[in-house]
Length: 88
Length: 402
Image 1: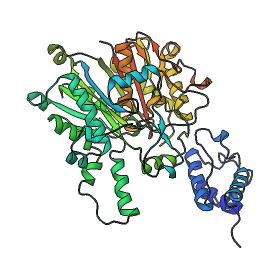
Image 2: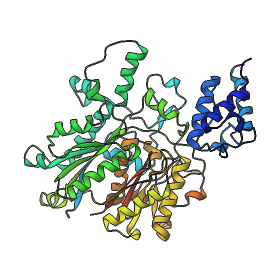
Image 3: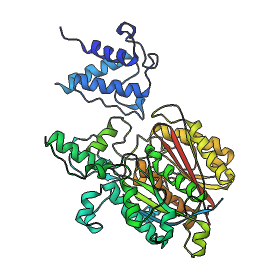
Image 4: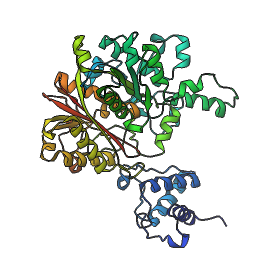
């Protein structure tokens, strides 16, 4: 079976944070996982490449971007939405 | 130690193809940022920039020269002709032996890299023009200025990303002050506005899609520009004896490193560069009437820079003016400090402070007098120009009215 969006996003974040996949929980924040602003931009790049999507994200104001990065779960939901929308 | 004065200035940028037209635009608060126009622009997410309009290389160079000059070199050579022409100097005699050229650029001949990568990768060709290397090398512009003007003294290129020009002009200042050179031709240039250049910047996600609004609460990133500015830094007695027109005196310079992060700026490093330049110049904080800010329009730079200025100047921070002219000409990366020095000279010489345009909403983290939207008349005796580069390398230069 193909890997789910959720599992793939978690794998990308875990790799960025240099953590085990099991240590990345849906309610974890990127900050708590030790991912800084540069790590975030890199993670988003990896997500765009993995799913062939465009993620609306401006590093100047992450909180006001359309892309919710408040937790791993929020990112997974946002990516699921983008995949559905952009591959429809 | 010897005194150092500026006796010539030249520029090509999005606001104009010389100093008078650039100053007119700065006074009027005119925006030079427009829709980008070059091959494959439709594949970019970022499509605005401070692009030099109406650039016609044939008007300034012959066919052999154009084959050898990347755009960053072309911009530099034109600006150097204007600056050296204004100074009235000739370097053909002994003066050329004790005079040199030091220029800043972050990336040199980006258009040349871009065009030739396209040739070998996209078009699949296996042969490139013989001049690719001498065209793209970072020191091409400095070398061509030295050759065109017979400058045979200390000459080199400085690459410190967005602080390149300030670092270059600082070296020129110190070389003349220390007696190593009589005259230094200095400044910087950049020309990254091509598909590959802008695509690289897009990756970092710090670029604005609509405007550069430094210090404004609704700012959403930087906008790139292109062009060059070149100055003649001359030993004061040499300039005085020949009755040269003095545009301003260069009085101080300092450089520091944050030793922190490759992209995030830190206030402490910026503040040490500011206080270092004041100390080098023998200026008190109260002497400074205007600062040309680094002011990129990113969330991180503007608040960090304001914190550094507030801390370095104490109470006087509320009385001085600080503006970012990047709102008009864009961020010229390695050439930016040079173009911004024109706004500093205008402040000292003409008593006109260039505004920060696009300012829409106050930001409590940038609570300084940023000269919003409209230029201001004011008599200032001393000014600073800030440059804070990616990689945490900071360079601040201080000028005085003569």
